[in-house]
Amino acid sequence: MIKVCVDGTKILIVPTPPCLPFKLTDTVKGGAQSHLKAESKLVLLEKDFEEWTKNYKSDYISPPFVIPGKLEGNKIILAGVSTLTKVKNKPVVIQATIGTLMLKVASPAKIPPMPPPKPDPTPDPVPMYVMQVLITDTIQGTLKSL
Picture (cartoon, one colour):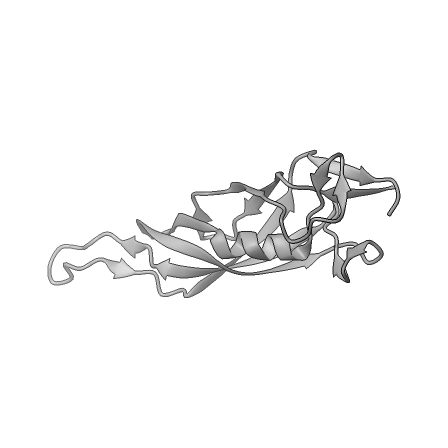
């Protein structure tokens, strides 16, 4: 029996210093497929995580840039998806799956303005940050047979 992630799985975003996103937890919804279920819920595929990534947005700071900026999901690479259980040749996300999340800076965090001669805030020069994504909850189902 394999433990698979299902619709409503909660995840944790593990920041990579110095960047600190404000939104560190989230929920991944199913919808990439409608054929395979576990515990009466849709099983998650890589495509569900890709869709979640496209919609992820968070404010962030990155000391010394303490005026918050905005991050947007760019790409996710999942490791540890099922190599045996697939839906239409797309791998199923299992309990042990971890992800590498690339977040692009949509609006840079800033250093507060200094006294003259530098009155404008200084923007964060980093265009993209990389974080880890872990599956944190027990909303997983067990596939008994396909």
